[in-house]
Length: 245
Ligand SMILES: Nc1ncnc2c1ncn2[C@@H]1O[C@H](COP(=O)(O)OP(=O)(O)OP(=O)(O)O)[C@@H](O)[C@H]1O
Image (cartoon, rainbow, N blue to C red; front, side):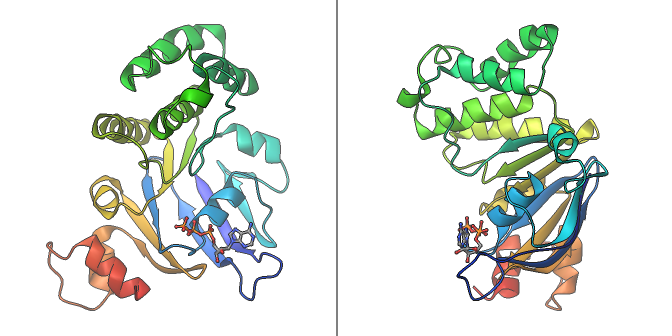
């Protein structure tokens, strides 16, 4: 579960807040899509949820734990895949996975079982001994996904996770997201790929200029815009209407 209570962030030197009084609850067992045009404030929000940035105002809770009061316990609940992940280039894939497993205190039995399973799923078993420096963008993304999934986080946060993935890996990722939500975990991800959001998400939020312009199930969003309600009204049309882009 993720809760944002009137969260705001204003970068110094900017004439408007990047995130403006954002109020949002993402429940356990949900796949939640976070959409918005470039510069809407998605990454800033995600960085605040993961504790990389501190909000200027408001509070955030992860699994009921306040990031202000107990940041370490809150962060332990999270698996995070940043936008354009750049894992340490001088480590091999396996060294990086081991490093992340150490940070999250993953027990040896889980490592023995989960690492080969995830490497095989993402087709990384042959590259895992190589230096990350020589990886393609998609391979870096996959090793980051594997490392973020190892400790079976209760809350999985992904910033633009489909970028760079080939169709098979994208399909594996979508299945992992569904499995996670079925297990009662929370999946929160940003994307520009509206077809993915449309098919995968239980609920969505659309952000514009740091403010929510819509949130809810896709059917609710379809009804809420006041236009003709049909199943064919694509998320793309809704997005364009709501964001004026
Ligand atoms: N480090 C920073 N310093 C100053 N302004 C920033 C910084 N990072 C982001 N911003 C500004 O904050 C606003 C929100 O940016 P953010 O990266 O959160 O948007 P986004 O929705 O993730 O965009 P995109 O879809 O392009 O990744 C933008 O106006 C951006 O220029």
